[in-house]
Amino acid sequence: MSDRYDVIVLGVGGAGSATVAHLAARGVDVLGLERYDVPHNYGSSHGYTRQFKLTDATDPASASLLRRAEALWLDLEDDTDRQLFSRTGSIDAGPADGPLVEEAGEACATLGCEYERLSRTELADRYPAYDLPDDYEAISQPDGGFLDAEACLVAHVERAHRDGATIRARERVVDWSPTDDGVRVETDYDAYEAANLVITAGAWTAQFVDALEDIAVPERQVVAWFQPDDPARFERARFPVWNLETPDGRFYGAPAHRVPGITFARRHHREKTVDPDAFEREPTQADERFLEEFAEQYFPGGVGPTLRMETCLYTNTPDEQFVLDTLPDHSQVAVGAGFSGRGFAFAPVVGEILADLVVDAETDHEIEPFSLERF
Image (cartoon, rainbow, N blue to C red; front, side):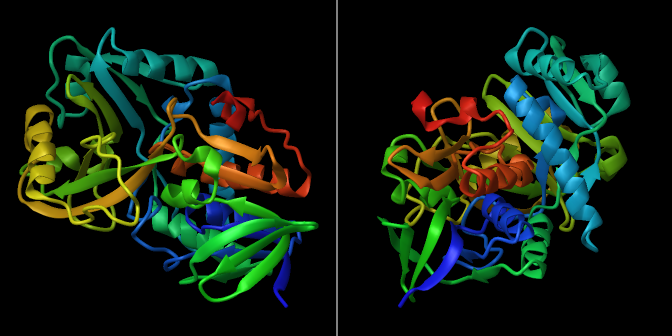
């Protein structure tokens, strides 16, 4: 006989841990299954910092979700002995007439939040780490910052445990199938049944959802930590989280946190789609030099010796919007996927939505823009 639960959550990363926590808080008998450790460094939710920026509210739907996520992060922080959210402010910079600066300004207008538009000179006077071209401008927003990624995941898991959830790590899901009264999930260890299934498997999601095979596409991402030559310029009070649009793409970073060094990365790094079970996990010298050259050009004094490099995975959709929906042929199965390198900030509200979908078959959040049908 299989063990029986109300809901099984496949994947206990950023979104999955939040989903398990929300379900357990509602008194749902929930099982979370994770193929690696909790947390682990093979997917998209490990590491030390994830940006939280109100300027990521690129449309009314994501603006509403981002505000709700902020409230849920603060609530979670109140419920743990860890600091989860550090407010540093945020900078979005690029050509004055470029999309990043315009999008950031529009996001602030949509949310009605405080912001300033700074010239290249005004930015450098306030934050001397920057050396940008003359035609660049920046949106400075004081409420942004970073989340301690692994601490956030642990806090969700601890909350879930307090509310009665079961989480099994190092147990790989082999397959799932619909049954007359729900689903059956087979792992390399056992089999389980439930009335509902939530799939939050990150880069592995398409292995369990055929409809996402060419939609939720894994991509190799690399982050570097460099020792600054001029540390005073990069102290947290003088160096908010940032995004920078350049002719070579959009780059981002954060001040030092928990490990030494300043973070530098490029969105979609070198644009390599990969098999999440078979790709080059170890960063290379080419990865290192690629990020060094960027930092040397725009952040003089920010690039000394390399202190650390890590790979992680993005899972991108064609429009870089999330998938938050139930499966058309199996309404008892909900999926959260395709977070395209920006989903961690939304994790608690994603968990709330997925819990809504399997408990109530609907949600008060506006999720039509994130439906599977759009593809």
